[in-house]
Length: 207
Image (cartoon, rainbow, N blue to C red):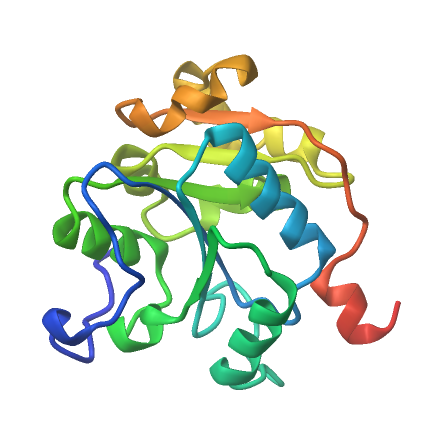
């Protein structure tokens, strides 16, 4: 499948500043709402991967989920900024300007604009469990290294998923995580860390 077309000229799309050689983690999501579990993933990736920045990429909406009741992008950005108070964490919603909810198109755009940066895709183990359903997931793995952070109840489903099995030969040892931004993709690591049971679904439903 092909990527969605952009709605605006790529030159007009605003992103956080990037410098050559910067190690930047990309954590995408609808963040409806953002919670402690997201923060655990962000902190762990910053620390364990020795990143210069961690971008919370607030998406127009998850293509695999219903968008019914999804708050406006601006309100979700404000919620993320209220939670992610760390000098190396930045919040952006440039995917809305790019005109696509698809990760593959987002990464292609960033690599073309900032070829000298070292981007890493960051996600929780719950996303690894369904990664094989993402549009062009193999292309994503071939474009950037991936860091997967443990989430409660998702370690086994994530590591036994079709994507994890398909990329088994590209997995690096956890103790080598700091080298991940320098590895030629495909390359990924599974990081264990303290866990938070919070989830966006539970927070929305009051469960």
